[in-house]
Image 1 (cartoon, helix red, strand yellow):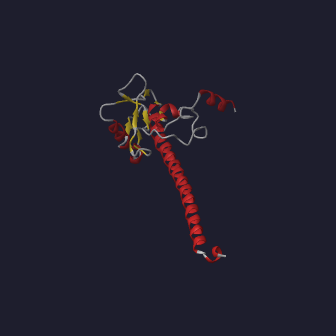
Image 2 (tube, rainbow, N blue to C red; image 1 turned 180 degrees about the vertical axis):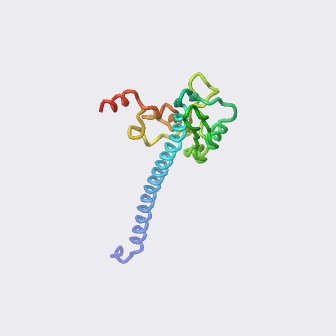
Image 3 (cartoon, rainbow, N blue to C red; image 1 turned 90 degrees about the vertical axis):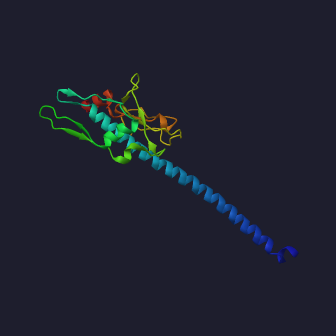
Length: 184
């Protein structure tokens, strides 16, 4: 009978249970927000890296009789190379083809995962050239496959964002897929 009359104990246990359940729920919401933020930053990383890769690829394509070298010499700081792409890289006209201008958005020179300038990718054996960019983030990516975005498998199944290299190779169509498309 004493237990029924003392309702304060039940109220205390009820409130404590509600607080514990709310704490668990807030913890789960916090994890989902973290995942959502990482997914959005990852998409921005792909978008910005793809822009750099596209410009490097377009500038490496032959125009008329001239072939533009796919690599730029590294004369200044790495940020200087990206600044050149923001400030317009102009390819002179050749024959009857007009002059081409390539421009990168100013925000595209910043790696969204680290909020710092990209790390410059140099081709093997040429430390003084620019071939693309990569992140310095050692976080594990959520995305493991890029088959719906790229023909290339260069970014698939990487363990860190720093393993994703956005170079002209990423934009080049695969020989086998080009052959299959011609046959269709």
